[in-house]
Amino acid sequence: MSGALDLARSMGGSIDKDQVKSAVDQYLKYHDLHGGEQESRKSNYTDLVNKYYDLATGFYEYVWGDSIHFAGRYPGDTFREGIKRHQHFMALQLGLKKGMKVLDVGCGIGGPLIEIARFSSALITGLNYNDYQISRGKELIFSAGLSEQCCFLKGDFMNMPIADNTFDAAYAIEATCHAPDAVCLASYFCPIKYFALDEWCLTDRFDPNNAKHLAIKAEIELGDGLPDIRTTHQCVQAMKDAGFEVIFTRDLAEDFPCPWYQMLVPNDFSWKRFRLTRLGRIVTRAIISTLEFFHIAPAGSMGVYNFMLTASEGLLKGGQEGIFSPAFFVLGRKPLKETEIVKGNL
Image (cartoon, rainbow, N blue to C red; front, side, top):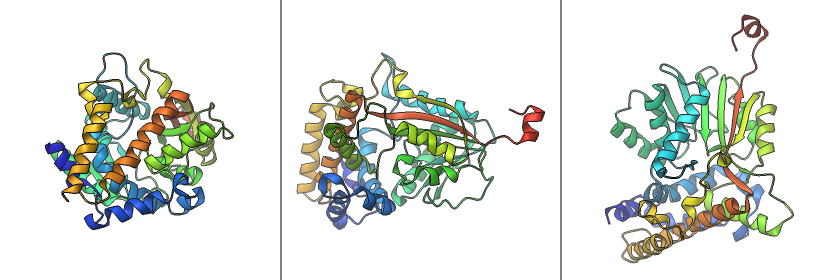
């Protein structure tokens, strides 16, 4: 019950509790399924994404934990083991080590940067625009004893307040999908030697003329605060157009025997992920409805739960259809200067 009360207290993030329902209504109107348009989402992406994470972060932490991303798993793996492996993979691909200065782009509440800092001993700065997530992240960093090694920087990753050569490397885990312009976004990282991108993408199986595919795409956009969803080819090309040499690409969702969306299958019962099962969803809905009825949770809480359920359903269908991946990986490198090539500093 304490988890439900924590969820009620966190509902709405930094939004005034009496404004949560209005914020839900405004958020929904951005999306196709509620009469919205893609161009409006792109031109108002800061409001779209900020509202989304104010409304959704409490739910994510309640159901998912402090690392709000997917991860591949082997049979017998726990969810947490898969998450840690994914974060360690990012650190290893970038060659992170003690003393390096690293930027986590769109860092959420800091779960990945805490684990990557522990694993690599690098100095990690989390870039985030959402005040609630930053405040929550600072609490988690303090609890982890990493306040000297990790910090947060408030900023819009389409207009970052960062000077060139501040960081040795950067990574983004399921975050830059919120950016309206991939080329513009990637351009900001070109002064950094290495940039690792783990992105939500449409696969080659997606057919833009297929009504079912378009409906699934719209559900994912609504449930996850996205202006649009790029294809894998668009992500790779954006890195190249921004000036990076692309040295490695892979759909990590295809690397593991357990489907990435298995966690979202409601009939696949497990006590360890009870809140994601069909029975767990019924219990959660009843708890939220009751808390909202007694004004413990703000009005509009059920609206948040409903669009989060839309996210789960859209992602599950996207995975089962094979038209969506949450883990398309691209490793980019700043082009080497001729002097570096001659010296063999590859």
